[in-house]
Structure formats: C-alpha cells, structure tokens
Length: 311
Length: 285
Image (cartoon, rainbow over all chains, first blue to last red; front, side, top):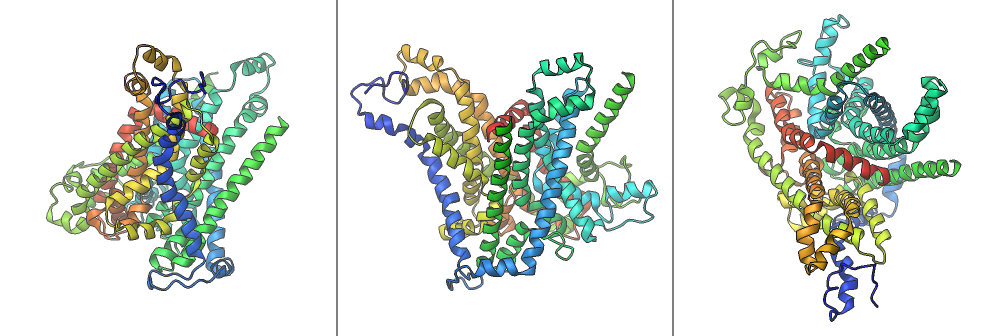
C-alpha cells in the first residue's frame, strides 16, 4: 500500500510502523479548523437566515417566532419599497460596474504604454484601493459637502455656479455621486487585473500587426480585446457582487435618501432588520440579495463558457 | 510621435489627479482650522497650516472636546481595537490558511476538488446576506460588544481567499527542497520548519497583510456587534463622526487620515505581493 510518488511527505512516512489511517486522514485534519469555522459562521447562518425568513420574527418581541411560510417573500416582492429598492440596486450596480470596467480598462491601457513615470503611476493606483470603504465615504462627503466641499469650490471658481449647493439632497445626483464614489474605490482592482491580462498578451501578435501596418484601433479590436474578454468578465463578476453588497457609502453619504432614491436592497435589509427590527422581513431581503448574487454569477459564467466554445 | 508623447503625458497627469486628488483634499482639510476650512472659495494651498487637529486626538482643547465629543475620546481605544482585531485575523489566516493550503498543494485526498470549490463558494456569500443570523449567533454566544466576535467573522470572511492564495503559492515551491531535507534525515516536522516555511514566508506575510487590511476596513460587522462607542473599532467611530451634523470638518478629515495611514504603509510595502495576489486570485477565482 505504499504510493511512492503520491505522498512522500505525509506525516509519518519515516516510520513504517505507523497505522496508515492516520496518514490518510492527515489532509482532513489540516482542513478541519477552516471547515469548522466556515461551517459555523457561513453555512449555518445561510441556513438559519432562510429559517428566519419563513417566520414573522422581530427583535422587538424576541419570544414570538410564528411560522408564516413564504408570506415574507410574497409580501416582499409585492411591496413598493422592495420594488423601488430593486430598481435602485439595479441602477446602482449597472452604473457602477460599467464605470469601473471603463475606467479600469482605460487606466490599464494607459499603464501598459512604455513611458517614463509609468512605475510611479502604477504605485498610485493602489491609493484608492488601500482606502477603507468608510474613509472613502468620508472623503466624498468632504468633497460634496455644502459648506466646505471641494466640488462646490471648484465649480464656483470656474463660474459654473454662483453659490454653494447641497448636492446630496438632489435625488438624481445623490445616486450618481454614490456610484462615482464607489467606483473610485474599486477601479484599482479592475486596473490591476486588466493590466496583468494585457501583459500576458504575446508580443509577437503585436509585432505581426506592426509589419502589416494595421491601424491602432484595428489592433485593439483584433488582438487586445479578445484577450481581455475573460479578465473583463472576471472583473464584472467580482464588481457586480461588490455592488450588490455595497453598504458603507450609503450609511455615511445618503442614509438611503433623499426619499428612498438611494435605498438599495442592502440598505433596505439593514434598515428593516436593525432599525425597524423586523428580522423576518430583513432575512427575506437578505436572501433575495444572495439569490441575485448567485444568478449574476451563473449568468456571467454561462456567457463565459459560451465564449470558450466559440474560440 | 511628439504629439503622442504630449498626449500620453497629459493623460497620465489626469490619471494621477483622479487617483490622488480626493485623498489630497481630505489631507488639506486635516491641516487647517475650521475657520479656514469654511472660507469661500476654498484655499487650495493652506494659508495657515496647523497640526492642532492631530493634537486633538491626544490632548483636545475645550472647543475640540465639545465638537469632537465622543468620537475624539474613543478614537485611540478604537484604533487599538482595530489593531488587535486586525493582527488576530492576520495570524488566524496565516495559521489556518497554510494548514489547509498545504493539503491542497502537497497531499492527494478524496474530495479535495469539492472542498476547494466549497471554500470559493463561501467567499461569494455577502455579509448583508448573513448579518442577521450572525447577530443572533453572537447574541447567543454572549459575544456582542466583544471584539472576539469581530475576530471570528473577519477571519471567516478572509479565510477562503487566503487558502486559495497560499495553495497557489505552495504549488510553486519545488518538492525537491523538502525531499533533500528528508534525505538529510529530518522528519516531516523538521522539514517543514527548516525548509518549507522559510521559502513560503513571503506569501505567508502577504496573506497576513491581506487579512489585516480587510478587517481594518470592515464596518458592517462592528457596527452591528458593538453598540457602545467604547468597545468598537475605528470605522464605527469615523462613521459616527461623519454622520454627526455638527462635526468639526478638520477633526473628521483628520480621523480619516489617521485611518488610512496603516493600510497605505502596508499597500506600498507589499505592492508587488498585492498585485500578484489579486491577479493570481482573479485569474482562476
């Protein structure tokens, strides 16, 4: 029963007398702590969340826990607050992901051009990334502030406004500002991934195109873009998941307002559960967010495999 | 050719402004007084730069103590909490992560593919999706208002990525090294300590840095699990500050600057690792 090459370094291979059951179980022992932690604090909560969502539970009356079946889900999908939050979430996610991909791609392409100062700029890309989301929110609050905001100051000096405005109280602008602030924090990750992908494109391809005197745009369409499709998809998956769970910015910048113009599903879940203490309903919303996350992942992955077939 | 160089240079300057200007603005507000901050139009270059906002966090004047109130008083303790949680999460990630990662990189066992998939799937679960049951769990365990609850949840949030990162790195370490050590009559544990771990150290450090930075910025869990300002972490204090309509702008900006110093240092120190970690995690993750 000696597998020569398979596990030459397993625990007790120096002592032939050792029972091999111990050796065979060794990899499982190594994974046990991680599995326990993830079972207890991810898998169990996912299950418990579903169980709670089937009940009319409130932190106001912790003793009562009546089973209501799928009522929470039926009430949720028909309630105007949910539908509004769903629309806001979609708007926010689509806009944020689009902006992140475009900015990330633009920066990656720029950083891939050999020229002086490139190394420095590559390091600077890490600046927005290293900023914790809550500080990112504070940062943009200080920029769009009605009294000291840099945005106001800039527009005033450019003569575009004649007095300071409160930008975040405008329902349309508020969502736009949150999108922009969220994107700023997340563009670096996209840039880093896309830049690595750009660097993986074989140089010979470009050299051949150079000999043929192909136009830059055609080189981009014919060589660069096809090589980038897969990494762009990965960026889109990661960022859509990130947008669906975005929370900190809403907490600091808008609090879901004005009105409910920036109330996303994540914010609605928090409000419902920890402000109105309606945990049954909150769990329902949170389950819908997890469902959306899953759908998004599958949707992208499907597109991903389809492309793979074509190539 | 000349036009192109100028064009690229302009683009790079624009990119640098986009990346830096927001942080620079926060920094500017942190080194001026409230009255200068309120000047219209703003002073893009401070007229009377001062460190009094920074001093406030150690020794507040009467006005600062009133304006900053709880936030200032609790900031040092909250920072300390953030550091404790961050370091614990880092250590937990390195220890648990490298154990699991070793099994994927070096041992063959049934179900390894499924297990790795399970780790990756658990990474997709959003915090807002499980915050309610986690709150209930922490309540039952009596861990609310205890930073141990934060160490637990931040570790679970970062562990799957750490396992993935470490496993991909461990696979690149040649087996010959350990085999040579074994020929030198080291037992498995000695081979681990003397040969394997030293080679793996850079990646272990990077994993710890990732864990620390992730938990340092985490806001939702401390917001929910720690209700008192006295036993919470830095992001909660900042959010409290930021949503206080009377807050002093300089103090708010300063708290932001203080909070970005550790991640900035780590990000630039481990720049190569962070870039490498992202790309290896993203290419297959």
